Length: 344
Image (cartoon, rainbow, N blue to C red; front, top):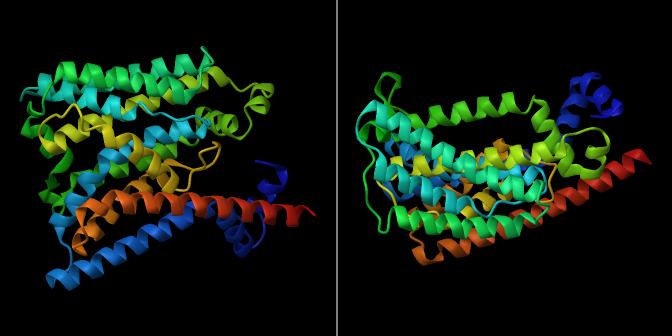
């Protein structure tokens, strides 16, 4: 942060500080606004169709169906912040949910060990991507497209057809409710932990390095930023979150499917874009990506409640993605013009 920005944010009237905060977080605020509008539209349509407001079941279902894509979107966020992209997310989701469904049995030791194994597989897949991109100096899109095919092939070897079983204990832990807390969905607890974890991570030098690399890799290297290590770390953590997405997906669906990850790659990228992150790197946050994931889920819910043809879901998701990219480009242009006008 520059000296001028520090003064602007740390001094002056509350109105000045609010204006500075708004300018710095415009994409995120727009995303939150879209999310609020989508929630309102869903509630209105639901009431008109069913004669009652959405209840605990609808809330729990929405959260549970979003958290898998939300976890994948957080992993994608870390990679996108560096200016890269991870197309292997779907393959990692495939292999981790297949491993969990095939190997996990209903006892605490098995649940813990297989869950850790799934996370380690995801982290290992991300580490491989990071090493090839950072030290091998290969293009991220080529590397991750290749590893996507590798992991999809391994997933089909592990689980040739949909099946297996996830113990009810894990399913209830991740997608059930907490009766003592007014049947609060467990997914909301996971969401809260993710938001707290992000607030901690954003204060670390690691995340500062990712933003620096995404803004200007040469300048970051000249200023002593460990570019290679940071890139490897971003892809490794991205793979870890993709592995968590696969585990969560298996738990929610009580079984595995080695082809289910096909949609996760596009969904994770769409959530990142809708969440206000720049695909050029250096701007955005996991909070926006999570909001983007919820927007995509609510869009499907709105279409369902409105009685739209299910075949049009992909069409509307694609349309929303195009609008999000256009809005992001427009906001970036307006902010640049504002900075230029202020500096002159």
